[in-house]
Amino acid sequence: MLEKRILTGHRPTGPRHIGHLVGTLETWAKLQDTHECFFLVADLHILTTDYAHPECIQDNICNMLADWLAAGIDPQRATIVLQSAIPEHAQLSLLLGMLVTVARLERVPTYKEQVKELSLQPSLGLLTYPVLQAADILVYKASTVPVGEDQLPHIELAREIARRFNQTFGQVFPEPEALLSQAARLPGIDNRTMHTSYGNAIYLRDTSKETTRKVMSMYTDPTRIHPNDPGHVEGNPVFIYHDVFNPNPEEVKEFKVRYRAGKIGDVEIKKHLAKVLNTYLAPLRERRAKFITQPKMLMEILHTGTERARLIAQQTIEEVQARMGLQSHISTGNDSVDPTAGAFC
Ligand code: TRP
View 1 (cartoon, rainbow, N blue to C red):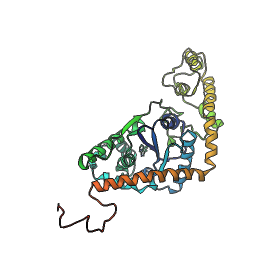
View 2: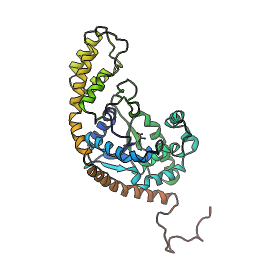
View 3: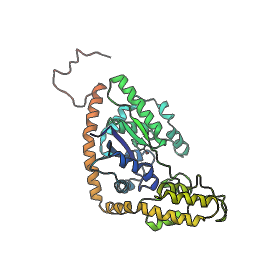
View 4: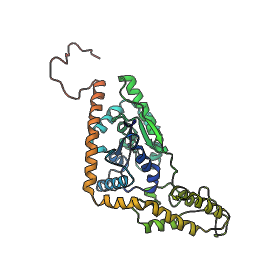
């Protein structure tokens, strides 16, 4: 019997990069051994910042799914869910929205950051982003949510909402707990955060040639001008990558000693890195190439998972509606509702 239920997800922003791989996907793949896993394709969340490119969404979903499967997400064991295909996510978000103040949502750090970056006025959808995320989690009564650090404020809000609901209407939801990723955070090849929109990511779908080119252009130690200058290893992306991808820790140790002593050049270190990274990614890429040519199969997997998830979501909504004094099905029988006997509030 599997342990607790997990729900987590990604917004389908397109192909996954190696930061997603070591930060989340490898963890998700392992969790399938011990937990009942739901992995959400959060396509509604995409619209909170970018609703004007409907032509990209389906393509991005296919690319993300191919990467998920290549990284070891197993549809035989996990349930892969398309958020927009289950109206109960939006419905629960509306109902839970009643329990949260606008002021509380305006204090969410991710919202504040995005408002600062946006040139436009923030939409209502952006403000309620974390309420929809809480609904994603609570609609399956998930108890554990593996996420990166940036998502912690959202999980905290989901916990608050669950608590408030339970206090007001009786125990329905577990208070979901965040499971913080333990993996090293990979910087992009320019040493900023690895991000699709920065053009600094190495993608699972990149060829080995592209990967090598990116590795060879990587940022290293800016204080080192000549190969025989002593170099810095700490915070140097080339060594952060070696630590993660090189299967031979002795070799990495030796590289570090030589680098610090100015006895090995950046080019040599990078060549080695390109080799180990390509070896690490090769089996994954092979699987990905197969999946991406079978969009029909990808959609079948999504369909099956979504159908399975919908049954649970429907049950939760019925329960929530009843607790909140609403009807899921209008009863026309005289026995169940007697308007003259009710309490008028
Ligand atoms: N907000 C998450 C992100 O950007 C994606 C997401 C949507 C999610 N719903 C979720 C994550 C529910 C965990 C649980 O990464």
